[in-house]
Image (cartoon, rainbow, N blue to C red):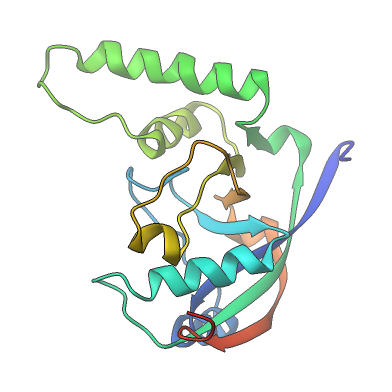
Length: 183
């Protein structure tokens, strides 16, 4: 396990053109309160198959249709103090404590205001400068989306890298494919 410094292997799935662009320049973080873990670049922790399944499912979304995908493999390095581990009791308590504060602030402001996890994490990171957010999720693969299946049991670990310049290195293409392969 990690002592003071952690190094993890991450797999990032995307369309072919975006993958080529990332290799030429660098990753561009997703921004917005609706993202799972807030602003950052998302990786499946050491799970190339989930990255492939993610690409196949995303390629069918209304806004992002594509036929070719790439899986980028990167080294993710950070100090232990720089990660918000939402799978730990301490990380979960910090998240939910901050979430409660946000809910109390908006109570009565407007019925139905959403307090997405990404919003909570983005706000939390204004007070605590976390560079990496870690959690486990159930990610719907294409079959699950088509059949509208859900589960509360996780099927992958996700890293959200907020500090792209200092935490991500050694990025390379480890797989390319056609989104219709095996579908």
